Length: 352
Image (cartoon, rainbow, N blue to C red; front, side, top):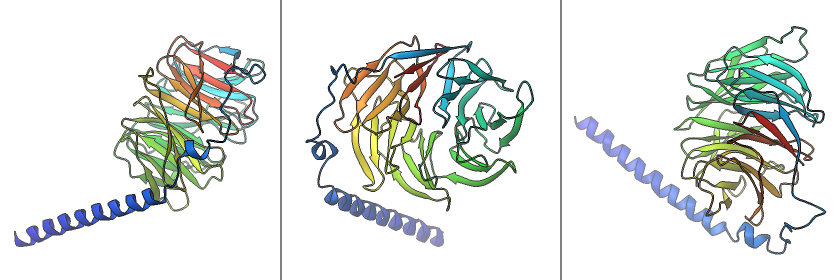
């Protein structure tokens, strides 16, 4: 018993020491925080909402073909193609310009939650309640295209997947972990475990060395793909983080949460820079992305709308309407010329 008491005393002492160090770190961060993003950008003109030349984004295309709720979409690097996943059990690859369907891939499980396009445009991947990440080769001669790899090691649903290249992919899951996979070998390379809730979203840095994960523990974490270690943890949200997206320069990232706010975090400053919320927005955010310059943050909401925020000022610039149900996913094309939104109303809309 004496040994147990000593151990418990040691644990208490170490916990107190950790809290002291955390307080010191927080004080050092606060001391170095000499300005706010709003103050630093005071000299930058506000976005003129009534500027007809710049203009409010309008629906330019409507992609119809899914028969049930759309849960995910992802643009290809070619700026024209995109993939969408629906609970009608189909993965559709679209030409967003012509609105034609290029591929219709039947899925083994219709309970799909995520999809991704590889940078080369050769592969797409998806996953969901089957706990697996299924990879499809778009250059296959099979009709319909069959699964070329099934990556299974997660013990919970697959919430998000993103390709690094044609050989590697990162997945996140309801089992509170993320995994880096070798697609060719079909094997797990690295497991990333530090969250205390379901991991809902991942975004990979432009240099492909790090990624951010957002989870139901209301925290976002930055991971090093080379070491497999968690480098930073970002807190501030009051509820589940449903979406994360790197800022175009890779030095910051945006988040969307069930607490009805989006936030911008800076990696170098290790802190929140801005919060994007409004008194009349009471619903959660499902998805976020940035414009090519990073000046605008697009966020999809449960109230069927997409809100466009000025990242520097924290103001809502536009509200994009048109969907008849929850906006479940959105993404900006790689050239920044188009925004695609997907909804539970079974349609995709292209805004420009």
